[in-house]
Amino acid sequence: MERDTVDVVNYLRTRFEREKIFVAGHSWGSVLGPWLANQHPELIYADVGVGQVINRRQSEEIAYQDALQAARSQHQAQAAKELESIAPYPPQNVNSDLMSIAKGWEQQLLGLPPGRCSWIRGGF
Image (cartoon, rainbow, N blue to C red; front, side, top):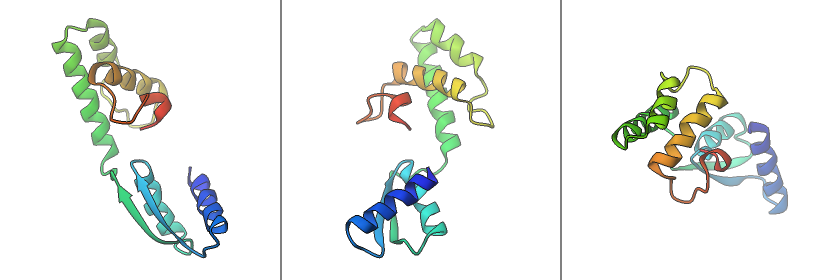
């Protein structure tokens, strides 16, 4: 993703014939933008973060707990069983199988964030 970020920035600099550009990053882009500004300040004037990621681990934990609580209160036994099976969540290391379980049930039980068609395919 870091390499792709640099590639896109360089494409835009070339396309618009600019030495530097402004970057606005939303959600995951708010993680990549500061990285870009730190590693390649020669490419951008500034990074503007929108929908800033502050504590991804805490956000994951809250969403998981909300889904588990919804499963229990809605008497969704299968959802509760599967969510309980991956506790504690999130794991220390990224695990796409566990994330798929959590995100799938979060989507079903809590709904999607505005503008998303899927947690898994739409990113987070």
